[in-house]
Image (cartoon, rainbow, N blue to C red; front, side):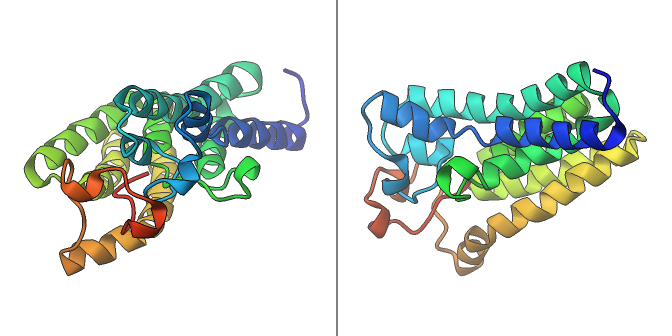
Length: 215
């Protein structure tokens, strides 16, 4: 696409943001009669909270959708506008999930979208992300710990494999993602964070939950 540099940048950011802001969790739970996801469990819009409804299929679909919207944003901008703007598109998609305009800028915590962006930008880092997440989840059974560790490893892999621009991009997303998990970190330090499969991972009214481990 032949656009001047500034217009191309704005278009890349806009495409990335709009892709990232699609709230798959909210759309799917409403479409299948589960109700408003924002009034269930932690109120978050990601797959972890969808799982609290007991609908594993919807949770898996939400996870896939939240991941692929980051991938699609990067690939679309690379193909249609300019591969050099892929990093901006990925960053915008990540922030779109965190702050979707459709939900008054109250979104999820970004783990799945982070992975989707990483997959499109540099698949070895995404592979490392998945490996660390699975290993940590098996050893600790803390979804939040798994996500936090995985987002440290991904930029390190990119940096070690001479992908400094991608490493910087992922590092920025990591800092923001850690900030979004501040409540989880506090609960981890206090020993009150829910483990994967524990009772406080079951569906509960929003007012009774202590928060979501991940999204």
